[in-house]
Image (tube, helix red, strand yellow):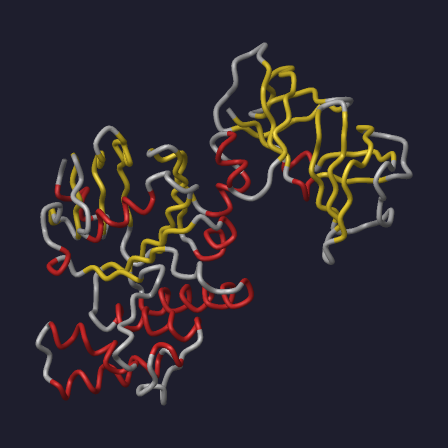
Length: 357
């Protein structure tokens, strides 16, 4: 491996594995994280994402493999020598210290002069919108304010990499949405390389430059939010990133770089990532918002509404059809709300249907 290749990335994981007894938490994971980007590790509980974060932080040592930071092998370095800061799920604020002392603590450990500490903490609090709250204790702060203090405490240490371990999971839905926007803006403004762990797919789609989808200790796919949503590598990614209908279809042929498939009464030309074997049955991913539902036009894929839910912006349905149950999110509601038991006819937005392997 050349030094040039390592220098293209701020942070690099090379063939990382971690075993706890007979349990393999991570299996041969390799990952390049460019300078100034926010990368999200996304996956269900137990997939290995938090173990990767702890290995980057130095809180766990890999069973095999290497971690590089700026081209330097830091695999064996202790946490305090890595120039990496971590924002924990619980925020881990010192309850006996006020806001100022919480943020100043790490700088004192690093033996900064008190005058420089005062200037740095006050400037950081002002940037975080927390000016005037220096003397408040953690228990006197809202969840959002505690989260800002935790981030600010990590940032004043001037790390090369900032790690987030599900930092918004303790907040209510509305505040969580606002705070993820604040984290993303702050990360972009500072240009700091960041690794973010979450199991919340919408959170990952909203804040990430790249998403690493993990399952069973390995990486399933790495890509930008749009790529993963529209062109998933497999059924797991399709179902985990957003909601997806996975439908079996018959492969008719390959024409002009697209697959011709037959599903119910339709013949569609769809995009694919890897050319399928001819004559095989294939699977299609169809997002709920890419299915048009109409109870009046007697044309298309016939179905009967099994579940109907009014969600404000959408009418959400589960419809029984000859190709299985389909989930539908109807934004236009041209035919009004369809009650349970209504006969409906469905069509697909062909350009958004994707063949998966």
